[in-house]
Image (cartoon, rainbow, N blue to C red):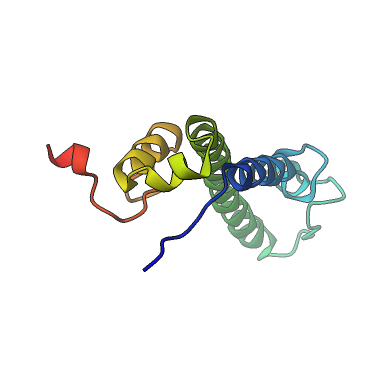
Length: 136
């Protein structure tokens, strides 16, 4: 039974793509940031008028934007951590043989060092496999 073969160059490419995605989300001129930074009266902010329910709709809209901002922040942290971890793994295991021989615990350790905890879980991006070093 053969294992999965991973080329460190693939991890370099993956890290680069995660960094590009992260930059797309955080670009001040990009759509996500334009939505989050729009203020009442800007062209990107819904014009709700002054009817009775407008204040309630505005409050709901701002609450949804605050939630979206938190999700964008979480996504930014995840992409940034994944890019950093992937690059570190590729740098540390430069040959396919070294990478294929790396233990799940070693990979989890690097992920844990580079990635922020997932929201609500308290755990960084993990493979789901027990970390033998943590059990020692």
